[in-house]
Length: 208
Image (cartoon, rainbow, N blue to C red; front, side, top):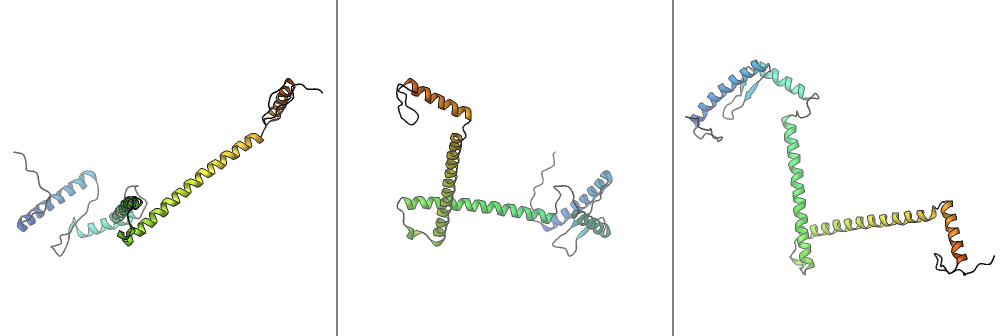
């Protein structure tokens, strides 16, 4: 008969909980000893029970303290990229969750302010808004105006750059291009009735 799967919940009976703790703790120490011998690693275990006045140290107090001192000293040296102290891990995790929460809060505020702005444009009244909503709308409008101004400046700059490029194209004419244009204009003038680029019509006959 297969062994029943253990439920990962706290044992309610104190008597059963104590006996399970002692049995599992002895098994943990045995597995740790096997692992240290088979793999040649140093293992120390600290077990703290809130209902007891002292912690359980394995294999001994001196070995545990020596192992902890080695670990702390090594953690201050450059180590593997993903190796961090538990304190730093929790600090980074908290910072990541805080940043994510702020982003979600900002997104929710923008959605709410956009909805309120739509209502006001459709004939809503300001009297029903509280101070937080009014301040949010003021900031919302200011951000939108700043984006519009940046976009306007971007388009204006692109247009100015295009005009400058066109002007440089007309100014930077090679001598061969200039001679060709003069010859073409003279031929059109001599052969009659062809308007130039300025709209002027030259005589049909040329008399030197």
